[in-house]
Image 1 (spheres, one colour):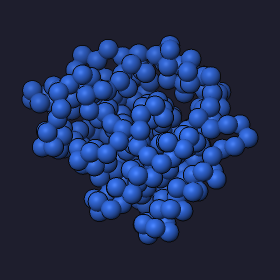
Image 2 (cartoon, rainbow, N blue to C red; image 1 turned 45 degrees about the vertical axis):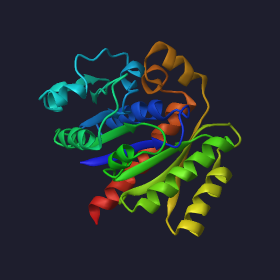
Image 3 (spheres, one colour; image 1 turned 45 degrees about the horizontal axis):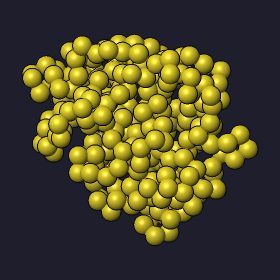
Length: 247
């Protein structure tokens, strides 16, 4: 199973929307493979809302003895393991148990949405990723927090997967490449670690409309700039996945 972790240094950058739509687009590009989305945004899980789902079960039920497979809700061609919302703070051991249980599901690809920021629990989840995608926007605060998160992950020595930077909410004429390069160059020059700019997703009214309608933009408006851009990014990941499996 290939694990793709979506992380961010701060909230409000569109991380969960990207996780939801990436899982759907990966499923569409690989129709013979099962894609599962795990909402591991501890305590503030809301991927189900973006999919219009009121889940009967969440990761809380794993603590009660259910398997991760039993709590999956299927929609839009993917399986959702819904997270808890408004839950008490999790211990590191409970996070590890939840993660181990979710790794037992029958899936070819798992996309994991995480909480923003830095914590031991998030590092534990992020370290499970084959591909770790840090989402930023072009704003200086988001870029700074993205670098701080990448620096923390690199210096922790716990992340063995590939690190990527994804720029979200970029303009039509400026895809954020120069600002992404400023971050990735810092990682290379001062931290000695390669972080690639995976791609950019242009700002689109389709995203905001889809959120209001509780329907992923990849479904609601597949011809939008955002859907096109995330499709390109997913294709890049699929190609990287094929290269790694061929090694």
